[in-house]
Image 1 (cartoon, helix red, strand yellow):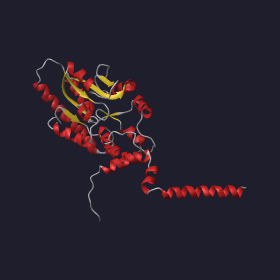
Image 2: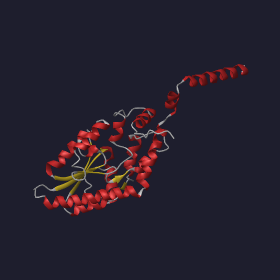
Image 3: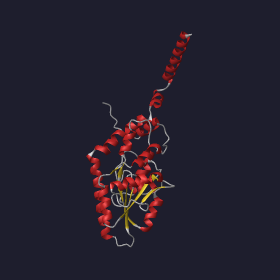
Amino acid sequence: MIRKMQNGLMMTGLVLAFTALLLLPGQRDAEAFSTKDLNEQLVMATLWMQTSAEYRALCYQTFNLARLNLQAFLSYYKGQKPVAVIVDADETVIDNSAYEAFLIGNDFGYSSKTWNPWMAAAQAEAVPGALDFLSYAKAQGVEIFYVTNRKMVGYEGTAKNLAALGFPFVDEKHLLLRTDTSDKQPRRDIVMADYEVAFLMGDNLNDFESVFAKKSVADRAAAVDERKAKWGSKFIVLPNPTYGEWEGAIYNYNWGASAAEKDKMRKELLKRWDYMP
């Protein structure tokens, strides 16, 4: 009886091994490639944000530009409306790279199950230069509106985080989280109805206009080119190589694609040097 069982187990193992051999290499790779493997591709971008002096320099440069723009705007603005600046939150004034680092080494991606506790923990740090600029804007009589796509479930943690870092205007009027739509235009319109917006700041093109949403890689680039006079003046962009609408465009917005499919789509868009050593 024991020998029969051993023989049966041996035959089952041989069948499984033979079946695996029949699979094409690409099929075997796809089955083996996990979200944990995909998350490894976050390592360099996350390290760049957390350790490179170049990232800090870019952030300071961005907020220095914002200060110069605001000074120029206030020097010629003669309207009756009060002046405001609209900013995004994540990767614009607060840094969530610790959350991205948390995903590395784990076999799961971004989800509300982990993002909501991160918001509640209120541990995001200030982006270099953000606090100095927003404090300066307040001192000039300019109001700050935070238009973020964090959902309302994260309001308490977000307000706690911003307030603890010393950011101004952290209240229900100025902190506008996502409610029924991820499109920020309705919330921008609320601000623009009563304020003259000097400029907007964000890390995602959807922070500026909704025209960029759900567009292909090529169409997003074309829309940027059409607005080239606005970058650095009306629209000021912060660097974020870890996530965003740009990633969705790579997948044709099929966020439910498998880890292997996402890896394939990412690599297919790389522009490679054609050289054989």
